[in-house]
Amino acid sequence: MPLLEIKNFTFSYPQSPQPALKDINFSVAKGEFIGITGPTGAGKTTLACCLNGIIPHFQGGRLQGRIDLQRTSIFEHSTAQISRLVGSVFQDSEAQIISTEVEQELAFGPENLGFPPREIERRISEALELVGITELRNRPTINLSGGEKQRVAIAAALAMLPEILLLDEPTSELDPVGTEEIFQVLSHLNRAHGITILMIEQKTEQLAAYANRILVLNGGTVALEGEPWQVFARQNELEEIGVRIPQVTRLASMLGGHDKYSLPLTVEQCRIFVERMLRRQI
Ligand SMILES: Nc1ncnc2c1ncn2[C@@H]1O[C@H](COP(=O)(O)OP(=O)(O)OP(=O)(O)O)[C@@H](O)[C@H]1O
Image (tube, rainbow, N blue to C red; front, top):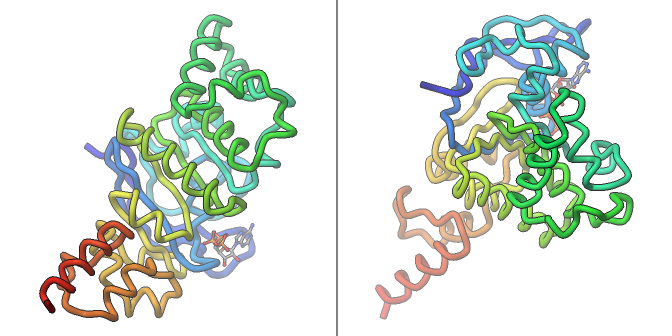
């Protein structure tokens, strides 16, 4: 039984003749880590806005089809209900963190939903621990690094105990170390705690390594979908769409001698692939 099901979903912004999303179909099972990628203007953020209630609650437009979360139409939920089901993290950590202290930031959502203080305290402690930032609890938010801010934003989303963690390019303002840290946190949440993750991301190297399924959007439609090796084996189509293939995958492709099942997606897989190639040549 899917946790989230999107069926024949089409959305157009007001005054826009062309739909931003066209006949989208896909489903998400509990515990999946899904990477959503695609070129600029593909409809990724629009899709995220449809999942976290910004559309239709704050941004109007024309909707067709269904988005069901736990078998109920997401559009029948109020914003408060959606905020308990879908925890959102955006690319701009400055804009999304509203409190001056980390603890307050995590308390904000549960307090607004009227939970008693003991429950709020439990949620704050658990969320900080899940993300591995207990030591940041009493820090002012202003002087946190970009990576720390994003981890605080993830913890604040988790304090609402959502069914899905939805992230829209959370690493776009981070350096490679900060990016890797965020992916490690997400991978831990997904693998060790079964948290369902939907992540919009342009960094295909990391998506290939961490996601269990990839969705490529292009022109408002789902262009490709599958496990990372299935999607990244379709290099010509990806290049035409304008999606970057992981560098190690490109290298292995140029070297040849692989079938689509053995195409490496990570540096470690590429090391094994090159070693095997060299052994065959000796
Ligand atoms: N508020 C809006 N009103 C009208 N059209 C919009 C609005 N927001 C986005 N669009 C259009 O909808 C389409 C999809 O945009 P969207 O921002 O969802 O793409 P994206 O894949 O997230 O792109 P990017 O990677 O650049 O963030 C684009 O053609 C865009 O111009």
